[in-house]
Length: 301
Ligand SMILES: Cc1cc2nc3c(=O)[nH]c(=O)nc-3n(C[C@H](O)[C@H](O)[C@H](O)COP(=O)(O)OP(=O)(O)OC[C@H]3O[C@@H](n4cnc5c(N)ncnc54)[C@H](O)[C@@H]3O)c2cc1C
Image 1 (cartoon, rainbow, N blue to C red):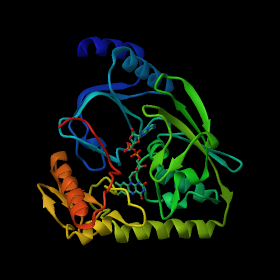
Image 2 (cartoon, helix red, strand yellow):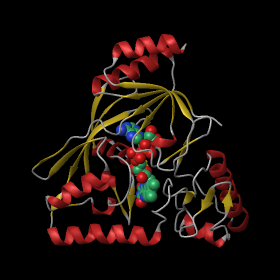
Image 3 (cartoon, rainbow, N blue to C red):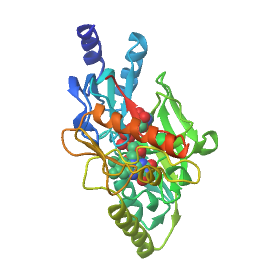
Image 4 (tube, rainbow, N blue to C red):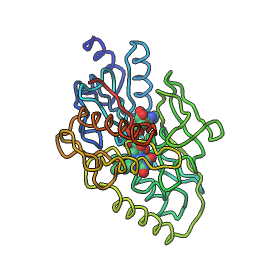
């Protein structure tokens, strides 16, 4: 099958294609087996061609941004990974509206808006990953989220159709958006307010400082493993269950933050998944609370 797909793919796109590429180097956790096929599209027409090929051939695909919210299993991904970091990196302003490509890192968006003294995205400071991933999962922190100032999202539907979707056509909730599964976010627009440069910069630095104090930023992780249940913090529940610092293989529940699993170097997805099971089980047994994954687990064992 691979040779047939390879010929079809390479005849249709201008971007790079890799076969059997280990995904660990593309995830913030530093974990993940190989992807059958990994595509680095050269532009929107490449993405469209890849979506079409996947549909025609029945190939499963995974859209990947910064890989900072993904746990890829050790057996890797059977299908096509469409890697979007490094493409769609445009960023410009029209009055108070900021347009950003989906591959722009959130840190760059925050820095860009701060420089223009436009306020609204400071709460995103320090969240790794790209605008596309953040919009898809409604990333946020400190009570704010990326949806707060979002005006429009442009995307390719899984069928490869261009769509411009305004905010009133979308639903966002805690770490969730109603964007269709399998769509590819291409760009997003944010409507921001003029603010005070000094205050914006202060808010950004305070948020970064707070993160550095409370999170194990010196280790590889995928951020919060679980969503916070209503009125609670998943990290506190894990801590109450006495699990902070626990290790399985080379993965460890951070002693600094109970909702972070860190890679001590050489951890496998199986190590992380075993910790996840344990955290879930203990919190269920001891506190009768069901905690739901925030990290997206993909691929095969
Ligand atoms: C140290 C650390 C701290 C973190 N802190 C926070 C935090 O405070 N708040 C928070 O919300 N998150 C946090 N995260 C998690 C993560 O950074 C966010 O979820 C981020 O928005 C993921 O973006 P990404 O580009 O890395 O997406 P990926 O991890 O690559 O993908 C995540 C999901 O988005 C989809 N996706 C990615 N790009 C696109 C696209 N262009 N179009 C369609 N779908 C796409 C993927 O298919 C996948 O389902 C943290 C992570 C780390 C490592």
